[in-house]
Length: 536
Image (tube, helix red, strand yellow):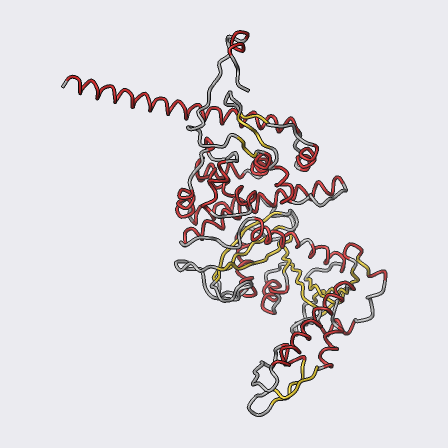
């Protein structure tokens, strides 16, 4: 609302500040809800204090702004950051909007290896080293076509094998639902060989009473023996048809699948525990938990039949053509192939003995554990690893991490660090949601991070004629429900908006005063030049 002459008649002592929108490089409407919640997560984890101490107010705030941009916009392109900053409050000093050029410079020179290492040491020191925690370790690779990156190599890509890659891995604290540390390594190094270096790094951070929860990609004789030698507990998952455990599955088949005492209700799965010695090690007993799931049986059987049908279709088209399959390939093991001396395929038939053997193992999976525990406890611990999987999906799907979009090694070193900070904040959001669901004993389809972010973005403030930002509408019922997940009420929102408005008002006033002084100085200069001309 704009006051008319009668306003000053009745309120003569009030002064109205007029805002020159041409001078203020910020939107009149700011999306504030997500910023309020993210600032709570940043403060509760003391991220702002550490970054301010080690990077300064400008670079520390810029790092938090870009991490927030990744969480809210699910993107990591530097060129789109100014658009985000235009309509959001910021953590940078004076909420200054920096260009994409400044962002690129920040990634190249804003941090170094000492800063990144110091942060990881500080962050891991926050964990209780005397408490037994389980670490879920998983890795992913990212495609890259940039030519000036030392770490990028051709390797075992999960998405596009025609492009070089680098690997990015995160150790996730299952016990406390937070990421602990991360590491990057060459694209040609496979997961199974990298594990021992991660274990050594965990030891370097002071973790002694830890267990590792790993998927089948890390299961090998060398890794199991290595963790045994270092005294670490571990939980390894593998399918029931793997050679290491398939004989155990077949030996115990039809002994527990229909027994109610073996039923694990949380996952509608039956399980038992057997003791076994692997690799000829007579001194060490390992606990193997065998599981059967009827729903998994249907999925495994359907997958097997689809693979057989596709292989048959392929072989049908290759009749009377020269073929070449390795002895361990799916086609060679599941089909009987009749070929001529020169390798032409004459006929084929299904290898029913092999297919029946694999069908008998459908629906089974195993967990190998170093410590004694029940089949139920082992499965619950492993299923908690889903948080680690969601963390990786967050990186690729919800933080824009499917591609790094950098062309310099320094940027590639620093950008994952910013992404790791974003993962910490996003994991905090997820942790609050899980705590709320457990406390309230209710759930619904909007109780997830992306849905809550979208709802929080609807809480906006609008700049009025007096230069102050205020809520442009009342807090809705859904807004209050979302804010309650994070323990925030309407009064706290208003207080946060009041503080934000004061900061932006002071910044805007300083901007206009600076512009006025510049204009006044320019006018004085022009006046002096005119006088000099007249004197001449």
